[in-house]
Image (cartoon, rainbow, N blue to C red; front, side, top):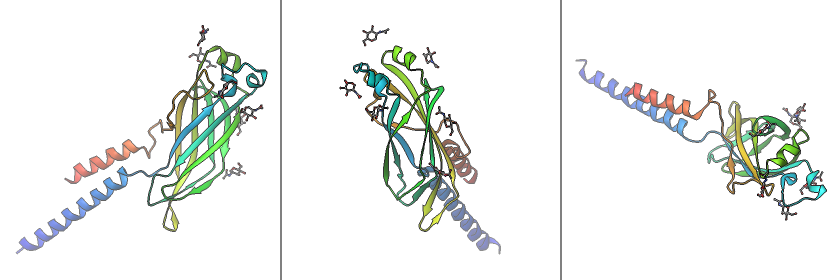
Length: 203
Ligand SMILES: *[C@@H]1O[C@H](CO)[C@@H](O)[C@H](O)[C@H]1NC(C)=O
Ligand SMILES: *[C@@H]1O[C@H](CO)[C@@H](O)[C@H](O)[C@H]1NC(C)=O
Ligand SMILES: *[C@@H]1O[C@H](CO)[C@@H](O)[C@H](O)[C@H]1NC(C)=O
Ligand SMILES: *[C@@H]1O[C@H](CO)[C@@H](O)[C@H](O)[C@H]1NC(C)=O
Ligand SMILES: *[C@@H]1O[C@H](CO)[C@@H](O)[C@H](O)[C@H]1NC(C)=O
Ligand SMILES: *[C@@H]1O[C@H](CO)[C@@H](O)[C@H](O)[C@H]1NC(C)=O
């Protein structure tokens, strides 16, 4: 008597939970935040082939930041983007704020800017003879726009190391991707781990 009803219910719950698991996995695995890159980075004062006083006394860091929204179905609203520059990856030497903006689906934006790094130990940096390491940290909040609605905003905290060579320019030819170092509650690995656990639990 119970046979058919139970089977249907069981079948329904199986389809429902697998569907839910699939949805959860899909949500976890696809990109949900934009990606930031240091596309260019140069420090004229660290150009060893330019010995002019003008170059030596130029305490500017020139950089180009790329912001990529790789999500094809969502726009991204960025709050003010705060950038911090660290010498040797430890000493804060400059900071800069990029204004808030909105970025459409699959779009890439470039910001070419200059910052004054007065706090940098220039004599020491120059003495390191063509290999100076910087770290760039970016902090902002992003919210996704799905059709007409914005989601709740999430913190985006990323950083990357940039090696500056004897030419005063970034050594790596390729853009440097800024990554989230500390595993926050929205860390990708945590989400993937949870999704996997959830799937196993259901199966
Ligand atoms: C370094 O200085 C040399 C000589 O002034 C110049 O030709 C070169 O373009 C400079 N390099 C960078 C990365 O600015
Ligand atoms: C430093 O050098 C950059 C690039 O050559 C230039 O745009 C900037 O105006 C210079 N800054 C100063 C204070 O000379
Ligand atoms: C964003 O930065 C601008 C100046 O760069 C400032 O006037 C504004 O108050 C900032 N907005 C927020 C929400 O911090
Ligand atoms: C930068 O790093 C070099 C080598 O690791 C070290 O000798 C120097 O003391 C450091 N300087 C600062 C200001 O941290
Ligand atoms: C960074 O910005 C804060 C205020 O926003 C300022 O007090 C501090 O001096 C800045 N640091 C450097 C190294 O420019
Ligand atoms: C700095 O580099 C130049 C060539 O790259 C080399 O001739 C010189 O000996 C180096 N100096 C030090 C202190 O390492």
